[in-house]
Amino acid sequence: MFTKILIANRGEIALRVMRTCKAMGIRTVAIYSQADEDALHVHEADEAIAIGGTLPRESYLVIDNVIAAAKASGAEAVHPGYGFLSENAAFAQAVADAGMVFIGPSPKAIAMLGDKTAARELAIASDVPIAPGSTGAIETYDEVRQLIENIGLPVIVKAAAGGGGKGMRIVEDLVDVEAAFHGARSEALTSFGDGRVFVERYIKEPRHIEIQVLADSHGTVLYFPERECSIQRRHQKVIEESPSSAVTPAIREAMGRAAARLVAASGYTNAGTIEFLLDASGEFYFMEVNTRLQVEHPVTELISGVDFVEQQIRIAAGLPLELRQADVADPKGHAIECRVCAEDVFNDFLPDTGRVSFLQLPVGEHVRNDSALKVGYEVTVHYDPMVAKLLVWAPTRSQAIDACIDALDNYHLAGIRTTIPFCRLVLDSEPFRSGNYATSYVAKHWPPTSDVAQKARLAATAAAVFQAEHIRRRPRPSTEAPFPTPTATHEWK
Image (cartoon, rainbow, N blue to C red):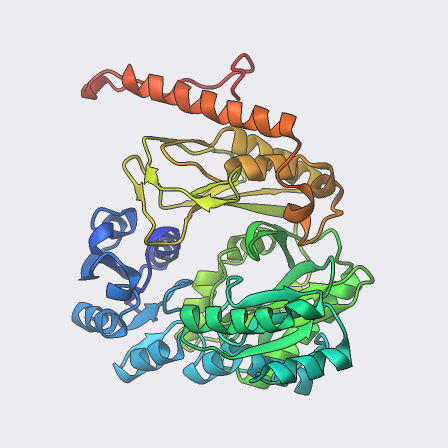
């Protein structure tokens, strides 16, 4: 087992990896940019090394700087977290070339499955259902027109590399095809340095369902109960839950087995996620592979009792999985995750910036906060707007919804606008409570009626004023007063 691991990331995921390392008796090394010198992940690590300027391209994305820090620290392994270099095959190879272990799949597997066109080809060979479309990258507009003649409209044009909704265009009318094709290619080239795109039939009103997998180097592949990730804005997830109200035990097994076949065929090891689209008839179609730990992995941890970071580290150290498929086949209870992003949800989810002036996180027996927030934390334009995650677990779905709403009501954060009001209103909406929703939720139901939206704005304003006044009246500094416990008489709550 490793004795020291460098975490090539920042924020809540760096802290989350550190927690498991500490529990396993493994020392941790943090890296940080100029902007993160006073960040929580820097203080929580056993060691911390500066790697460059504020911008990611000056620090967290500079492979040579990260490798130099890892070698200088004496780390035996590198955990990439998610984002930044986590799905970069060149980085994984550089770690190996430097004599360290990359805690993730091999460079070959990352290159193969991280490329959506190659992954589609492997899915076809592995008898995994895919939506009709191109098997490889499409180079010209004429090829797109020819394909549409064969499979019909609507279609979606997607970047072959990358993700996060970038390089993606939905086409429902022939007059929009050329603009969509060139727009997707241009955005893909700008975002990922790779302008290749492919085309597939667009599934209307789908559910976004994903399967978490673990694979060791001894031939064992495990799949876990599904995560529902259909509450999205700009093709990016905001709320996830497990299990899905749309997935039957038969679909769960079929989807899990398909994911396991794909993983086994690729020679993949470590943790990964296979993403599918599920239509209203119960048919599912392969979408892509995420060759890393997902943001929403804690949802599956809560319904399985498995620490995925621990399993990642064990697999990377060459140890066999001790779990068996029967141990993880069925969900235990229900879990929900809300992403806390610095965004103005009533202004088209525009990113927000600012400094956290007050913070009190919700607590409870089955409440989990994965957060990098602290008073004084500055949210800038340089990094992803997600600053924290709130998770709850309960025996049933309805209990989990109620518990999550209660936790959101007791999430006190001032200084930045966040997605908390959005999550609160979605969870209590009829489509979500009934489980009858799809990836079109935001387009259909957001923003809410003017009355509801106005009340939410007033509540947020009242809470901010209340907290600001409390801070203004706070004694200096040795007798700091606690934040009053909200009661039913506080209308802003």
